[in-house]
Each structure stands twice: as structure tokens, then as C-alpha cells.
Image 1 (tube, rainbow, N blue to C red):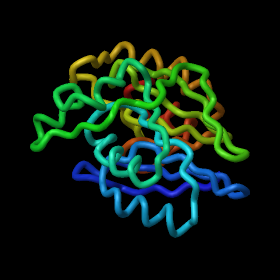
Image 2 (tube, rainbow, N blue to C red):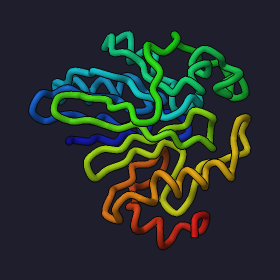
Image 3 (tube, one colour):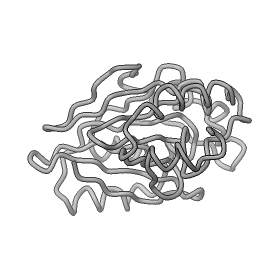
Length: 206
């Protein structure tokens, strides 16, 4: 599994381009902005984008979805509980930050246990609501893309509409902390970390 991280948009969201080295089939996780930069990386690696995946529906994670979909024709995936954030600037909070961001409805909604395949690689959906009602993480071989659920020594905000601190902590403990210590965590903002480090050092989940 090959991974490129790009910091995109005004809030420095981590967008991940993940691909199978054998087939060049790829997924783009959380294209929150800077579509041209994302597509430059896709073109440079000669990738075939199979899916666009959103870990949740906030504006800083979906800002470039429409342009990336137009450029690649790849289907857009999101959890059903956050699906209406794609089409509502009020729900995705962009109406509070300037010109509203919207895009077409999701091509497919995803849920706990769904397996997203691209080439010889795959990602398994983990439902981790708390930051948003439809927040998910994506578990691969030795890696987990945690969106705004878990950060390096921190967690996602829970003071937005639909957020729940108790839910978030519960799902971090039940879905993420059960993973092996050496699993690399690729969060929605900030640097990578590991499950083992967060188990010991994250003040929110001690």
C-alpha cells in the first residue's frame, strides 16, 4: 500500500491518496480542498482513482469532492448519517465560513464492516461517531485512517451539531485501541502517530 499525504484547504486538512502498487488503483480520502494539487499527484503517479471516500461530512474534508469527481468520475462514498452534509452548506458548516460548499449526493453510503477494495489492497470501514453522527475510520493492513476521530495526543471536537464526547471516547476505545500497538494512525489533521503511543500518551483516553 502506497500513501501520499497532502495538507489541503484553509484548515490544513490531511488528504490521503492511497494506492495499490501493482495495479495503480487508488482511493482519495478526504479531499478537503486544493483539487489541482491532488490531481497533480494522481497524474504524476499515473493512478486510476476508484473511489473518493469521506471520513465525515464537514466542509474542510469535502471541499474538493465535486472537482475531484468531475476529473476522475470516481464514485463518492460516505456514511449514511453524514450523507446530507454533501448537499447542505448548513449541515457541513461551510455556510459559517464564507461561500457555502455543496456537491452532488453520494454515489454510495458505507457502514461498519464494509470492505473497500482497490487493486490488491482494501480498507475496512469502522463506524466511530462522536465528532459527527456518521464519522468513520478506515482500517488497512497495519494502518488506520482516523479522520477527525483520533489525532496525535488529541481527539476530534465534539461541540459541533451532532457531536458527542461520550460516543467518541467509547468508539475510540472499542474500535481503535483494540488494534495492535504498531498500527500507524493517519489522522485528519496533524502528524501521524501509532495506536501504542496514543494508548500511553493521549490524555483523553487514559
